[in-house]
Length: 319
Image (cartoon, rainbow, N blue to C red):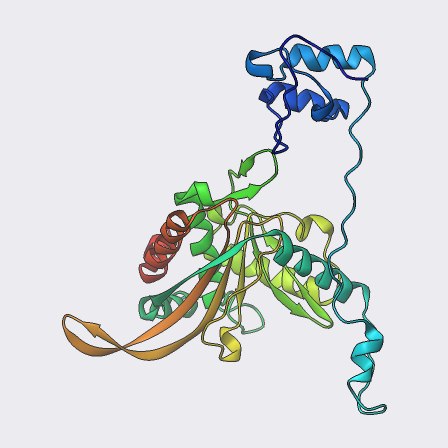
């Protein structure tokens, strides 16, 4: 049953339905199909009273959308036929590998990625790290009480950059952007059979030493598969670093619900131009993958520029 008024139906030939935001929200909550209603607002626009009247009159709920299965690619049987029997070992997927495959496939299919790359000079960062570590007192076992890594500084820089460019510290939903107050930065950790991204909560307000200690604990529990859900679920962005493997640069797949992920390459000596003359500097390339639904190019570039400024002036992160 649908409601008739003197204003006409709000559906157009192109399938669009004209309705006020409030009417859309109420119809969604009630499970009503807006296309089945007739609007009494200007030019047939569906307004709140039309939805209320439909509820009272028993208009049918919106039909469930048809489930469309994405192409699954070649079947297992077809793939196996491409290789000679006995030429391979078959390793069944465990639950972690299945979860990774599902989430990454979902991310690629549903998130429109774009990438931004920038080079950061890290000589000052390396000097600060060396000085900071050399100041660590020795514990009872003779080992230094702390030893921070370049990755610890990268996490801190990312957290501060998100605070200074808050419109990138967001999560996309169908109804709105969620702009987060804190920088909860995930850090990709390789574990047997896959990877996981434990999260440093409120990383912007923690010292480099605290971030370093927390990351070591998270990584240890991750490898032992002892992480609690609140230690790896959520987060606002992530960092993944393959520099220790000699990878110069790469782009990463965004891990929902994040809107960005920063891929960090190896620092290496390169020839640069300073004051009009060639010089040698240690350069680290980083690539920011961005969810274009939530963040546009100029805004992503602003975040990356702020990250570069912090990395190249690391004293600003130690206060």
